[in-house]
Length: 402
Image (cartoon, rainbow, N blue to C red):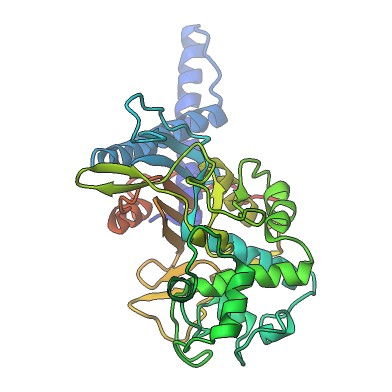
């Protein structure tokens, strides 16, 4: 891979070569009495960049069109060096209809577990406001919490040792027509106090309860509903106008389907089945955020420009939270980390008929988001392979300025 310095040397060499050639042509033409057009070097390199972008876009289309033939039903956006190189919608909003409605680039999908990076950002904003500390016991923010020694940082990095809330709800929440909420989760922990997975900070164990509790921390500290805080502090400042947290706060009965144009689907041998709403969708923070590929791209740009947090604070999200790497992976604040791909921060999500993937390569300045409304599994090897492919690379761009 060429470094920035070597790229500049190559560009300088090409410019000098062009000037020498141009000078020779001018000298010859003057002697011959012909007019010579003036070469605009900047335009020439702009055209060269367009050609590289087109080539990379062609690569992307090959990869994701192949995936669409093998089950991808969703929307893809790929960007590099600060510009969108490729975006395309594949398939249908509702696969069960005979008269199918095509997906669109601006369709909103549930992000499933990819919602966690946004919940973590909310916690980091409150830390920047001086309203909480990562290493404080969460009983300071949720006084009735029945377990000792669990800190905000342990929740962020999945090291709390707490039990799974979905298993707990399956056992102790008999009325599945009634939404299960974050507050109901805490009350159930108090009433039932189920056995923990392990001691606080003893081991990394990915667990949705951690981010559900973080959403409650956001509410208790900010004195706002979680969905309102997310809108006012993240979505609106970034311009994520199609993003929202689905809330069942004022609902007493689970609706048949989530009210959204892009329904999730379970895929069976007999065909796709539209996924019905679920009582666990009342829990926020670990899932249930809806967004579009372009809104998530705006969020990536905001991270690069340090729009929400200064770089010194934002960088904490990408620091390994555990001393040991489990199967070559670790977890920061809402982002997964890989030893094999140390420059790529990522997350994959699945929940009730949706799949998603967000990958952010900070060294090559590449970004990929895939949002699907089926349970088709997004292939990890293909997505990482595409992100790491260096056969075509865009010239390095100027850093973004806030």
